Image 1 (cartoon, rainbow, N blue to C red):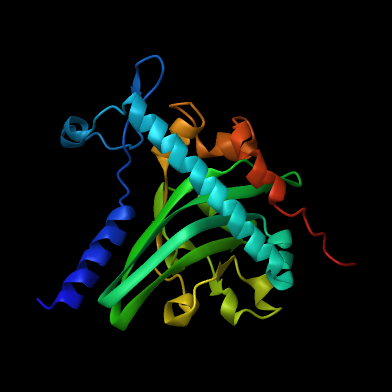
Image 2 (image 1 turned 90 degrees about the vertical axis):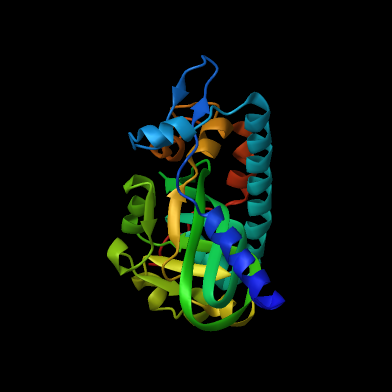
Length: 259
């Protein structure tokens, strides 16, 4: 196999692997272990290992880095008045500071992000998510950069907050998604999800397509120091982490409709 092809295949494997959706188990302070997956497979149970204290510390640090990087992305979005206006109207946003796409006929994409939603006019603390997926077609190349999904409707927020832990953002999810690069004033009010990115080139303008979205359960557990934490508890404000305050504070206030 030629070297460029081997490198592309390796990149794709890494990207798709980063979107793996089997969540690890987490051991709380009491020593009890709570599974993040609903599967009862004995094989999965045997292969799962409790998270060590060092692993939990490393994951917490990585989570904070993800939040700090998200702050930079919000700054980039607010620097564009049109994007800032959409963010002010959004009911929620998924921010992926480092989203990577690579392709050589077969394609892969992946990244780790955070979800914040508006609750009674205020932004919630971030919940952690993973994105991943693949494509097939006449394509070659790769790029990486920041990506954000602006959730413009209650239906979009509900899909992230309450639906199954893993789903594809396609027509089957019941959401209309549009790339900001092809956005119009009208589509901003009609789309459930508007995808913004600072990536350039073919991939930068490509639709998000069949990207899979899953809850990063183990990161949510260690960051909020609760093995039983749920997405609903985080987004409702029932459970918080003061280290996330800087990100919440940079989010724009709600932009009220013009009369």
